[in-house]
Image (cartoon, rainbow over the protein chains, first blue to last red):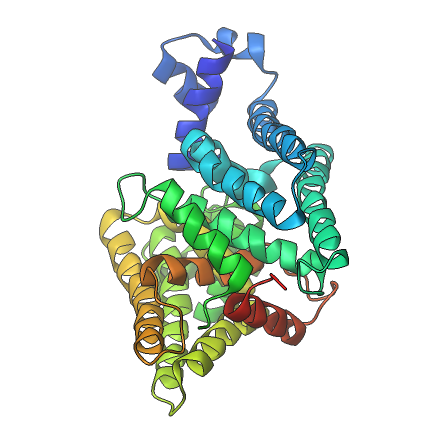
Length: 185
Length: 185
């Protein structure tokens, strides 16, 4: 039931926004009582927090696996871009809710999530630094470059359509090439 | 007064979301009556539509000026990236409201805005095609490359801080280089 509440609420948050979705909207869609909701979550805010935590912790775990592999910096960056883009298929909904609704978290919770997100970006920065140190990656402002990479991937959550022009595999190839070697001939 | 209503509502939409902001919230903050609001706007939705239209039409006009200049494709792309990033300072608020709240527009209005946004992206695609034709830009999937460029710029609306690590000028230089030549040494 916990999972069903999370899934239904993500759908409704994605469609009607966090403030536009009430606990009753969620319980009615699932045909359960409000008591059932409160058995699992103290509030709508707690539920939103859970969605955000699931999303970012899952990404961080998968990123950690990549970081520990015996690959050079370029390959690690490629794998991180691939991870973020492939997550659109499995976690597109929670990703969109995450990006749009984060400002609805109360201060403490927002700080927790910001810390996790920062960790993900800082891991990218570490790989960039490693790549700069061994001559794979151009020297530059690691934080801004990391944010540029995250722009390419995170924006895709807004527009990517599974039934659209390209597959996630094609998208990954195009964006990895673009990030690594640019668009100039 | 019209402008004041637009500005106050953008602030509140940015902070509390579209559904989390009522017309009373806006009129109370401005110390005017609800009648004043309805004199200018039929509904909150009309107001949101106005914010979106102002934002995208302004960008399209400025993009048109760039397109008509006697520059090669690379320079035009640079100018468009510069336009989008510099707009964070003047239109950061409306940009963020635009990206987050677009789903609250009713069907017709949403289609109008989507058409304008598509026009902006298609203009980038035309420049890319021109650049591919004359050997400036690597041959590739113009739509996806355009969406990659827009990812770098649009994502900046979410995180850029005027008092942060870099100025908009520095950001523009870093991102233009990244888009054109990539991060690989």
